[in-house]
Image (tube, rainbow, N blue to C red; front, side):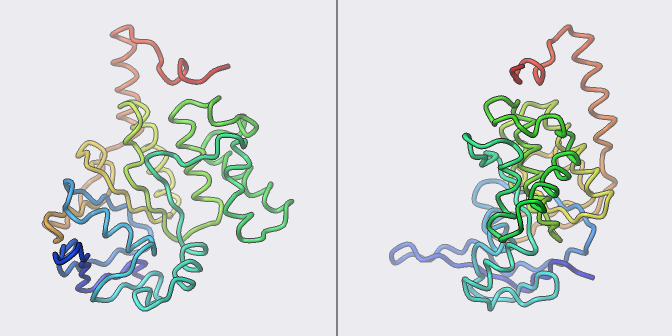
Length: 257
């Protein structure tokens, strides 16, 4: 079943007397359980497409169905409900609250959904354990490395058990090795059956997905499936190269004791 079905979608912004065509008749279908990387340079339309897929904006024309529901005709309240029950978001800047613990950050979506406290704690602990941070639940963001903060953000995206995770440049603020660590985690989630759409401008990151959609000037330039690179193998190789060169472990240095 297609979890994302976009048919001839356009998006036009009015800037004074000038119309900006951000999307020009985009069509695509993404099945449940796929891992798709969306690429494109600045101005290609990839961010506009992500906003529409994330129910943060509506197309000017065309149809968008998410998990079988016609999202393109929903009002703002309908879009908000769709976001809360269907989507998990991971951002480049982590978007964590600095004065709250990792556990409390992950609990936030459940708090907004009025989930009882005991159930919130259980599900947040489970999500943090799933991303390898079971022993750092009580740490604040400034006590975590960049990679660990992104893991908290991924746990927060998972805690509502979404049908689709949208990741917008999730490795943009991370070094190369930590970026591969994140892609290892995304591949593990993909193997567990979670649908992932990841926006990136980095071909090395897109190589870990099972499908690449490349955009240019508001159109899909190409859409192709590929044999994904093995993130675990790439991580082993990266660590071996760092060890051979005598470089310190940046992830350990970043995270205060």
